[in-house]
Length: 599
Image (cartoon, rainbow, N blue to C red; front, side):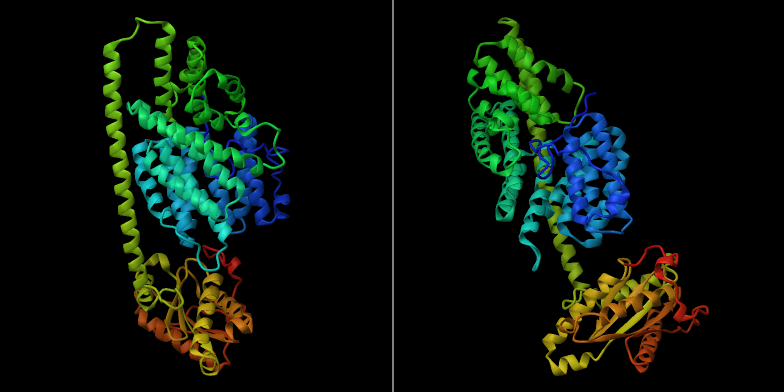
């Protein structure tokens, strides 16, 4: 079976130039000397290079990408890890090797967990699109509908960057994610929805996207319109198909205008139509004729991806037919027809190729060989396929609306558990987490800390309550950053916070909280107004009363206050103290044997 690859998600389009020097060095010592941005650029270079490399080169690039991912993982969860996971998933999905299915599942799970950890809607939507793409390639298309619908519901709701977020970076990432969803919808044959997503991706990239981003979206829109036109032809809707072919040619012209500027420095002096197979195919399919044949023949060497090869072959065959050369038209289609007969990765476009081949073969054989019964069967079969496609489109829209409503309901529920000032969990969420922590063996030993800010009243009195609110937000952000993702940091009320630390021995908790206290004390005066923290921490025993643990932590906190503040004091609950340990000799958390290191 011939390995096929698909159109990529970002500026790694089929027309991107090869990266000079191949996949690059994979030495861990070299990676140690690179910044996150340089590692990300190196990974993208490998990804681009492997798309056109020979099998041995693709394998080497893949090993290099896996090495970069392992190196990034060693630094802990980060945006870099998420980006490398995305690239490693794409390499496997676009490579279409069934042996990669389990590996993709593991990588997808990790990527999704990181997205959930950051509560990043764009990344959650991209994770859903990747899952749908995985299922469409390795499984059955119908099973991809739910994930594709979830991605559609999330990504089409992204309206603007958050305050303070870089507009250009937001535009680049959102348009890239929308482009990934577009590719999935094309695989599912949902061209109407793909059209909506494509227009949205182009609009977002126009805000602040690079020339390459805009070029990629225009080229994928050409692919969309050509695939749509071929599907309309199969359904007997020739007039609608002709309109789509015209639209594809117009979009190809827009892409051609971006081609040179976007690829400055890598051009060969040839026109976009001479270098880009999908642009050349779009021009030829709008008005097939012998005038395109020389150009199309030269484009065979740059059509590396199955979708582009199908469209180029169909365009070439139609131009040969227009030149009254049916045998050459048959030859243009026959090799790909045979290859795709055993390959179902691009079923929607493959059907268009097989239909084209059947028509051309009939013409090449001469009159008198047409079977009316077979023709009627083909028409009936296409009608059934059209009905199934319409049902799939309806299901996608229905699933997407369900996900949208579910997300809205979830957002309302989340607001009920969130402190509006700091964005932290509120008292109600704290009660739920404490109840769980004191009734589940998996959370033991569980540490509970109560934090009170030193000199916070002075901030309100000397500055303003607005200044006090700003300090609370900064302290909350600092705590959330310094402590682990598995620790619950909640606003208890006023200038008090509570931290619930599951599966954490008391000495380890004390060391981590002291680190958090030091971080707050180190905040600039213009940010935190010089406030510090008094912290009391106790162990909340299994089946103990949560209120008793809070009361004991409160007592320990007041001892910290009396000691001058800016310190952490351990206390005990009614169940007795923690086994004796010297609090001043608390182990470093990274050496404590806890399940997750602190950062």
